[in-house]
Image (cartoon, rainbow, N blue to C red; front, side, top):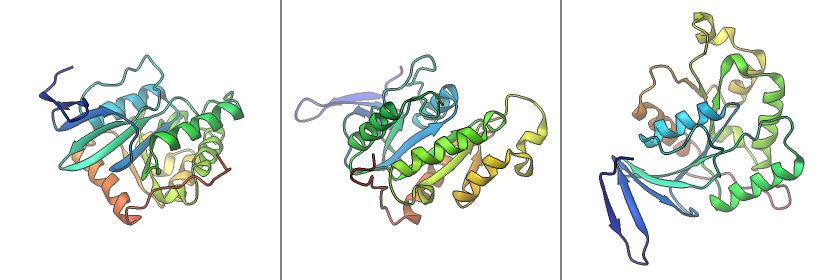
Length: 214
């Protein structure tokens, strides 16, 4: 891990600067809070590292939802990578624990859900489960969501055409008010700008988990 510098703040909190990012593990209370969800651990990890501009997350280990705080263009960002919550065998208890843990770690709540999806692997079951997870976070989660479509594993060009996507994926994109990007040829400032835009579209409001619902 290449560090550009480090400093010891008051209270003994060590902050590490990586390129444009300051990285700190802590419960977050401000900044642009982004939660990554999706149907592929390796793809979510790749996107998280893309946002951080360093290979901080491992593709071999399930993330623990611990927030990573950083700065980009003077904007504070808090990123939470998640375990595989779209697995059909995940129990109700484990799902509830996941939601409660995320809400606690990103209190008072997330601003943007970045839905990292592999288009050719996305099924109706994934869609139903993902929608259920989002709704557990609170009201209007789709107003805070951006779909990021990973580059298809196959070289067939038709997977890059919106009208060729699985109907369930097209339905999800519609629920997100057609906010989606392709990962292929995507530049870091472009993705970051889109996240900030969603933050502004919602007047900086976060998604609040209803008491007793999660």
